[in-house]
Length: 252
Length: 185
Image 1 (tube, chains in turn green, cyan):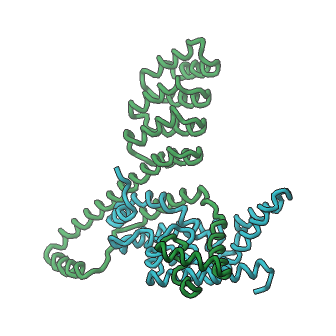
Image 2 (image 1 turned 180 degrees about the horizontal axis):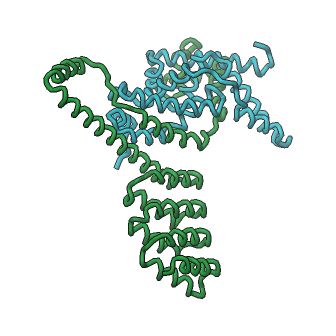
Image 3 (image 1 turned 180 degrees about the vertical axis):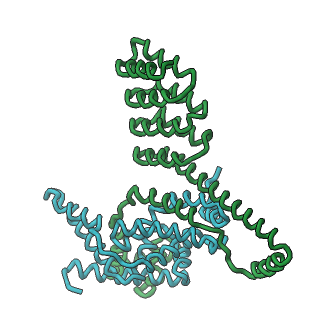
């Protein structure tokens, strides 16, 4: 193999996709030709140029863009011959039953907007679930932030938030999860899970946050749970006093 | 259960299931960021461009054709977004900052310093290449794409891609050698 022949085989040699005979021939040439060898060394050295990771704001900005796009997007028409025929047919129909078509069109628009809203909700749900499994506490906090826009009160998002509430090693994430779960306090499952979590928490900060949420409910079980805490001598002093304060305020 | 292919996800986006774009974003935004970073050496601008690519994917989703490799389509959009973006004031490149900090390393690790200097010179040589050659090298060396995929991105024959790779490396080696010897352009 000579320099000119290597020109057509160099890329395949670098990719390891030459057949055995050509590869051997290329290697023999590279051993004897310092110019071509310097090309291979340059190619290999390229690997050493580092590139950083994107910053955390990229994912948040993507989410914002998606939101904005969904808000601003309208049903789009793409002109094709089929659309041309459909357009003529629609024009005829307008002539025959203009009022009826108008009503249908409005209904269709509403339907598409509803579909878009559903898609957006699906995306938020998926982002929440994905972010809550991340290693970085900042990502998990971001996941909880996204969950604040999820409307559905019983489903995988609530389950993921409850898991974060009970098991996340980071106090800030657990605190944020308290607020996020409390949004669903109309749901008995969410209320029960928050109350049960009280005993599982090691941080008084999180316990106080849960108790503050409980103090806002009319659930009859709240009083007995708070009373148990206030009467239990093994309870942390801060928590016991806080339970007493809440009981006094609520006059259970 | 197998994860959905990029193409299946993009078809779903095209057909109105916009939420599937989040998964495509998760799969590709890092590689795309590095592609732009290697082209621009600017963190903020690269992040903006990634954002722009995914917006364009949404905006032009109806132009995606079945059976066309998604990554090739995405990089076509990426190249257009890069071409259309107005150049901004240069930031301090991160890897250059890393190179500066490398000069504070104790003398005992001279070899590492030497390597850092080589890498920095090569980075500068790459930055000096004409746009087209730089893109060919970045696509073929860093983005994990096959020559077939690159031929779709650049809209040319596979053999043309291979020849361009060779010529780009040749020019890069010449510029790198000049920088190593401290000769002016």
